Image (cartoon, rainbow, N blue to C red):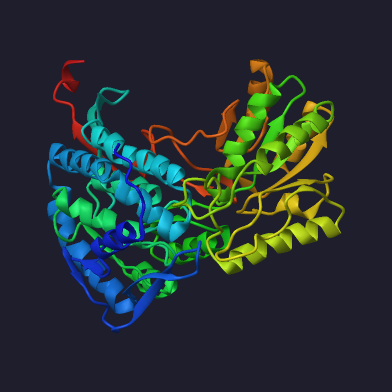
Length: 497
């Protein structure tokens, strides 16, 4: 990968290359209302670009295109769909620096992290290009020998894909790639805070050969104005959403009216368990990855550090030192290791959580304040808290790490499960038996064993309880975009048995 020096001229050149319209039936067009939406740089608060602000009429036009394209797209040979995805992977990889810089500009993450997201996000295109041609059915004889039985997988149909702002490329590829692989057409609704990366990605998929109408992109200031009418239309057959639990619950309620297939990747409140025998240096390294990746703005972010009382003092000291070594700065700056929070409101919410936690008895070990100056930065923070501190029940979504202690394995499990969420979790111990015992008893869809980052295109991603349902990635990912059809036929050899 060629690393490009970031200058103001380079930023403007990239921004000018990004489509700012709505992609409907293969063409970039203006919003029907004539309105535009500003996209801001969270490191400065300044406007990066103004894009077309889609509404209900635009959403319905996108669904019209998706519905019209569905039949032919479903009949497209798997190899053809696979080759489009593979070309998409190649093109995204070739433009890795463009995608990384664009994410840094609109979302704020340091360039090094943005480059990592390009690698991660592109891998969904490659993974599902391979899965496209390996999505097998079954053919077998019924147990009593009277019938031959055929089980096939068919595309579920036009799908609404709603992505969050925190991983602008990976969340788009993680939904679009399996939909393409399965033979589904799509309406993609990117987050209004970070729509530019999705627009550039859609342009790249056009270059990769995706036919008109298969992928439609409608960005807008009102998510409900776009999703609302689509969810009521019987032509829509699936909705895939990544975002907050309250919004996910509302979407599931709306989906029930049309019995839509749903995939919901919702909130998280990941516990990070450190047992007495853990390698503390490795645990701190993992804690930094699990907490500070994406400035803590991730559903998989470690939010509750549960540390055995025998090693808690040493762990907190090492963890605090690692946090203090970080440098909050605009992600394009070479010295940046922590970017800004996505906007001012989110930063205020994080600071309010810290203040409430302190009022309830927490000790600020380091940080605890917004950073002065331009943008929406928050100083990486470590809190020492009791087991009943209210911050332990919150999805912080920022660079704040509350640490509490436990005395026994049973207490650690109880504390880990004391949450409505069940997405990611992390266990640090040298004893594999401890890992197996604990992982079998904690209620989480993902477990990191001595690893702070475990997301991978080849692994099923998803949670339990209030963290949602369905899985993205892995062999399971394509199943979310298919329905199962069974064909029973008389066995011509039955009479001879």
